[in-house]
Amino acid sequence: MSVYYGSDAWLVASRDWGEADRLVTFFTRDLGRVDAVAKGVRHGKSKLRGHLNLFSRVRIIVTPGKEYWRLLDAEILPVGAKLDNLQYMKALAVFLERLIPERDADLGVWRCLERFSEISSPGEFLLVKIKILSELGFVPDDSNLGLFFGPPAVHFIKGGGDGSFLADFAERSAFENGIERILATNHVL
Image 1 (tube, rainbow, N blue to C red):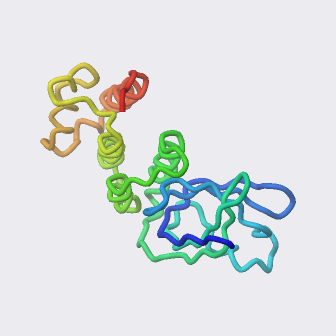
Image 2: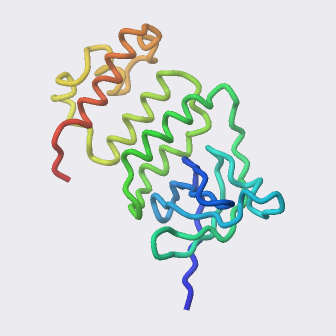
């Protein structure tokens, strides 16, 4: 007996697989990360072809397979994404693909992603990354934030300021390095 799962999802990665298939990675509300094979999607007549655009929000139906899930259906959902935020969406997709293991649903991370298409500045982008790390239990408590970030960044993370200091390349680089140092630290979850 086949089992089918449906969920809202963000398509965060896509790569060609075989002659006509594509391996797609979704971050879903109900299942977490799902790596699925979209059979025949690269054929011109595929019913899924127009519904698998990177960084799209979609409603999917999948079924478990031996190695990967199998994508059975996808329907694109309206989000109102702006073209000028594609760079942030791509970077956040890479960040998620790196952090989120398969089959690990997290509603807190999903709530952060609901703002995925609204990211339009470096400050918003970095704040979403921090919120995702916080939801996953990576961000240290307030008393230890100074070990990873400078005073303006700590103030920003705690909810103060508008992130205007991130317009400076050196400050933005220091903030991103702080995130990488957090990720490089051993964590007990």
